Image 1 (tube, rainbow, N blue to C red):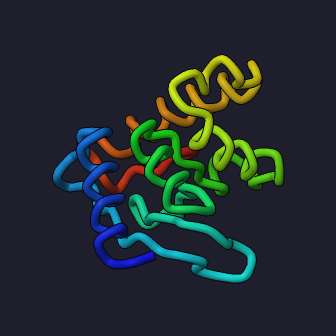
Image 2: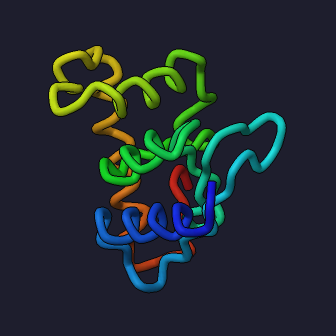
Length: 127
């Protein structure tokens, strides 16, 4: 991933979620460790998974439904595959989304919006 793509991801997340100015976000990381392959971003110092490819990461950034393993649980192979597949399905991707994935996506988005727009950036989810 090139620097311009990293900047584009950060800008997309900031704009789509209407990030609170005091919430620290970034940097965008690619394969930060062997147990966390893919594209990640730090949100309030929490690692958030965006996808395995730039296309999936941009799609996730636009949806604002990134995955924070410490909050959302371990990423399973099915989850990772769905993040990639939905980015390739086009406008009708929601028609192919399993009900369980739909509910999880909505929950993550709600928690992410709350996390990124809260007036107290020292607050973390689950505390």
